[in-house]
Length: 380
Ligand SMILES: Cc1ncc(COP(=O)(O)O)c(C=O)c1O
Image (cartoon, rainbow, N blue to C red; front, side, top):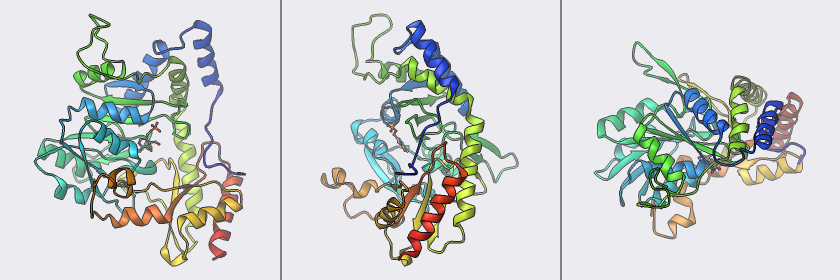
């Protein structure tokens, strides 16, 4: 493809830090970069503790486990998300309960949460989709009222901000991943901060933090190493990966600036084209355009699959939107989500895709992508 959907940006500082690991022999899951990376990311997001893990999926898995889920407990999450969210619940014996998407932000429709709360509900898992925050006040108020935990999935929203308390006299901007009991991040190569593969769980609770550390490291006991009272995982991240991540955090202001420039540049060029719904930024949000998505109106006569094919013919790589959890055979074949309908998620899954959105994208490339979008629409 002439223009890839993503390319990571690796600078000299990453190389310097990785070389330091190689030269000093600190290449495994202990070392100064790991500690510095955990501390720097927790502090950037406004949380006390960071526990680095092997990827975002494992971060969610131990985040849910550390929340103390009992078999049969329910966790409310958006249907429109990656499977990692739902499987973190089922692997821990819980039951995922779904809500539809907000048609503007594509994040969970918070107005549907109340109706899904039962005596078995234990947690809510908001997922900040494609770089735009969930309307967290609604989630936190409900969780507070019903004594529920909030497990935030901020994998796609590094550095995105939410205006908390907007109806009060003291609203406050808070970072995604810093507003809940436990939050999870991915540092896969397409994320704003990458470690190649990697993830992190954040929390303010020292007991949860220590349980997360134990779960990521086979539940070794500090006082009696090869003696186990519980089963854990090897979900460790290496010092080498953390070295890359630390250098990436140091560049966060420029990274966000670049992403916001990219998002605004796309919107400026595409907003006049009929038949497209583009990403929004609500007044209470500062979004980071992790991926620049668009949804085709049905009036175009095009599905996302057909549109992606037309863009690919013009050298433009895209990715389809998520397919809702209630449409996943792995769940429906077990009789889960029977008869459930989520019209917004169903529509955007079929009509949505995202355009090249990497940190290395240039103005000329954005022009070329937008030209291709226009041609692909006109070719109907
Ligand atoms: C919202 C969300 N959660 C979790 C993950 C899982 O992260 P990973 O790919 O690092 O396992 C992703 C991956 O992109 C994601 O988009």
